Length: 225
Length: 234
Image (cartoon, rainbow over all chains, first blue to last red; front, side, top):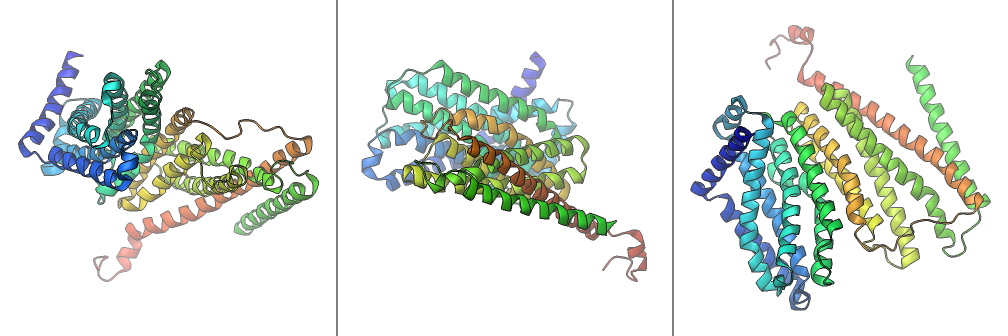
């Protein structure tokens, strides 16, 4: 068990070191996220922006598009110089490769959230102080499920010609239940002032479990050098 | 053999068309008109059977996708894509009939009610299935990615259903039906199911023919290459 965890951390650490040295992905997704917040803020106009609730929807749009770019980039690094073939030849379980990529994607998405969320909070006048832990819990639940599906399909479409739009088209419809649940929970938490219910959180955790188990099971089948 | 097959096909479609004609007569002549909604309510006799058949078509895609992942045989992929195409067609009908109903009942073409949202997400899931396929060049890779997506998309359906349950609902959860209405509704399932099965079968036959011709173009038989003076390298 400890060895598996060590392997996951090693694989993820490799991805994050590449990112830290190249600074390609995070810079790109952070700017994209801020741009999405600004464009939607301008599009919605001052009246609707001031309602505060628009921020959660806008944040989800930024996380979804930024997330897809993260998934693409973490898988694309394995396409250079036959790195994926080397990884597949390594004496590790394919599930470990999946878990490592998932951890890298979650870390990048967390970094994206830390940059984009304060921007949206300020620009949309969103009162995050009303329930900061509730917000974090809902977003964390959403991120895990989204990254689980994104990591799986990034591996599936990474060897195809048209990766960009294709991954978004595959991942967005599948992730919609997560978006619906988390936005409904946000509305209840911030709009109606209801405390974070156990039912909503259980549904979110159950979704994450389904996505994680299914992705982990089929990842082995689709990984090709 | 082919003549018998085409005659059977013809008979199947004739029976389906006759049943549809019978269903139309039952809906408009025999069944009483609902008092509140009026004649628009009759769309329900098409809406519900088509919705149930949409799920059935999605399930065929799911089973065929599992079949492909298990055996890696092209026939499973051909069946999966054929039923996905029919599922999208049927789901479009569900959405359109639902919108017509909604406009009459609530005065709006679209409301974010859980069931409308559910149908829309289901439609998007299977439209994405069809859209991603042409983007993948390799036949084996296309079949593999589609199979994985077909499995994940179907497992996503109950999650979509659970998630939309959290949304406020104005859609009727149960409808009281007169005995004639119930009989007509049950009868309408027959032609709609036959249509769905017939469409999947017809599309599958076409898909098989397309796949076989593509395979032949990609891997020509050895005698064709031998007969070619350039040895196949033209």
